[in-house]
Length: 212
Image (cartoon, rainbow, N blue to C red):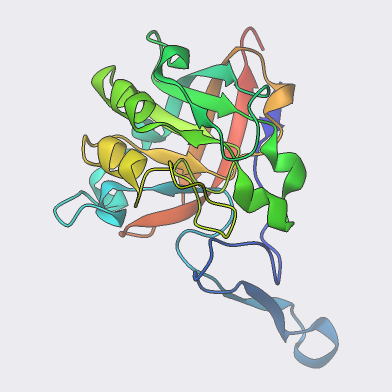
């Protein structure tokens, strides 16, 4: 069974603070033009998307550098639903027998709200462990690093250390997944990006349950 793990792209949808707003507007209509065409304005990190190393690493590769098969992953779902807001995911939860670790926090339930920004995040040690084990990373949150808000704690890491640890090691990061409860602990993740030769792009993320 194939399971859609993608947040839909819609006008006014939630984005990372400061990223371009998203707008989908009618450009042509059946009544006036004989065909329907929509205009789309968005950033490269809109909705469910993949980060290429070029996102945070000056010398990092762009999406164009990767073959299509690089976006199909043997994924392990890591249950982190017991973690509270802005709580770090410890390195002890990082698996060691897959292509990708999908950290399942359940925070997609808060999509579109201010609370979505207060998500759990990968501790720097967890991100470094993922890189050491050759794991790409997927999260059902806005960010594998803590997102800056007024609720940030003084003990939280500064900047984007998880991004640097992963993208600096030529790993890929998938953000804003949804619906991870519908896949098993082991599944195939297919997440093909738009053909943008840049720092990131929206994807249609699909989970294929083992044995299906």
